[in-house]
Length: 75
Image (cartoon, rainbow, N blue to C red; front, top):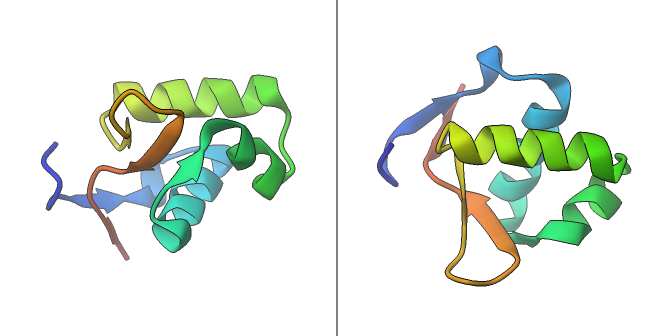
């Protein structure tokens, strides 16, 4: 997925959708702050972040703990 591709959120879990929406609003977010901002458990958050990263929907910014969207939301 390239940076310009559109992301259709209809095929994602509720937690994944919340993460995608958060990253759309904030542009990038620290790994641990994703859990705090969304009030989700670390276990569920970690699973969702790993899933979204594997699907190339979100990406880790460089070698930091920041994550950002890897595209634009399709609504």
